[in-house]
Image (cartoon, rainbow, N blue to C red):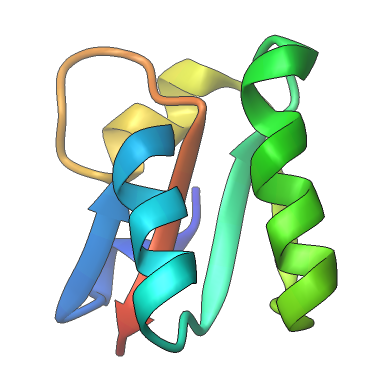
Length: 82
């Protein structure tokens, strides 16, 4: 489980919040669930490549959701401030 994500002071949870953060502020790291649907995560991955933000793959949406402190699965999350 991504401990850095759990300990982050400021993070985004979900694709909409993460895309907004990538557009408006520097993002440290983006976490993407391996089992997320491709059409959901592709815009995030493209933005990460463009802005040269590191991407960390997580085995499942359930694991990523748990790391974010939510009770449901999550396709994408990001650390904005550690």
